[in-house]
Length: 188
Image (cartoon, rainbow, N blue to C red; front, side):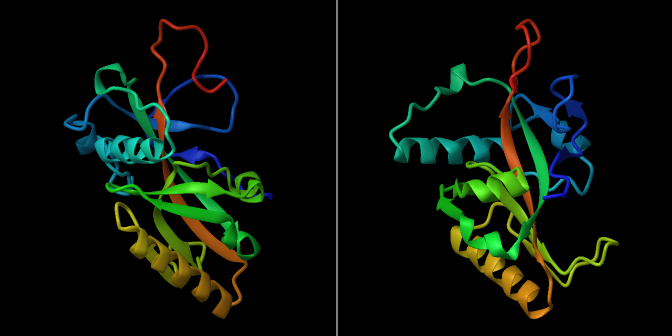
């Protein structure tokens, strides 16, 4: 696809060389004052809820869960992706207690949108007018799997009924940060 799928907004950038532009917000604990410094349109889930949700899905899959005292610092990145209607069946959700996470994606969805498993959808929109207005907009930040699925369905139905080519998904991603003293960055 020809759409831009780079992470956007948050004031901290984790590395300085050329990748898809990845901007993130640093947070060392859920009680940080960093939340107060976020722009009002940041639309980010809490780091504690994100870590807990990923631990639930890892536990369900029999994967090792990193003990709290060994966890790295995390940043939460934001991605706004355009999902064509022909690919809407390529996403599976998982109820992870504190958040609804994306559990599986078809490779065609990954290639088109840049989304990954373990991302969480915080907003679903359709019918954008190019000026920030939408015919349909669902806030899915921290909601149940049922409410996420309903908003997803409602956005798809709106898009189909109004001749739109797709829906817009705003997702958050938990990104572990590598300390400065290590060589390189966590993304390459």
